[in-house]
Length: 320
Image (cartoon, rainbow, N blue to C red; front, top):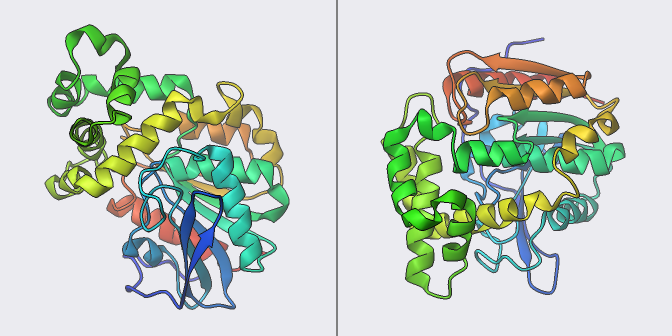
């Protein structure tokens, strides 16, 4: 098997775009790139609320893959922007099914990182018969301990400088439950209150995503349109515990992934989604292989993670 390239494939444009009406409120953006006869793969972005970017198309050999990207409800090019109504994990799983049916695909590969790994796992557990394989990065299982680690206390011990603006944005009396405090502001009727909270929340995450912090990367998270959808939708999902019936839902149902091959890529120094998440998942899903990247954090753009993901897409290009 030829080695995968160490850098992303060349930029490409969609050959087809769709505006798919999925509820009385929501319309989602869907695009297709690459080879219409190639291996179908669905790119499942992070956040929730992160949206897709053009470079996300470049993890896949366009000669071998039919590359499908979509912006989840409320973000990116989907409308209405930053909308929380009718926006749950199960709505997104239903949207993925609607995309699959619209495009006439019986089985596909799912490629998801961070929250995209959460949503990909949820879909695969619910519809294993439609999954050829999973390529997952920066595993996030949406357990209560994971939320507390990043948004209340944990990563704060490693990045006290980046933590300070996130922490001090909330008055001292409310700091015992930062998630609740931010939710109140992110759902405020005052646009200025919403935006200020969204930027504080979003920049905190952007500042901790890479092993070597990037000022440019953090700046993107402060952009108002991005920050409002990203922070509002994330906080909405986390306040509702991912809309799962119990804590640890995905690990408890990982046996339903039996027979689905998976490649897990995770940075050793991921402080947003600690490596323990990927370790626990791999132990519960023996058909998966865990690739720990020794010199990486959480971001999909870090060199070691890029190389491992490209290798994974090369391996799965001919998966039956």
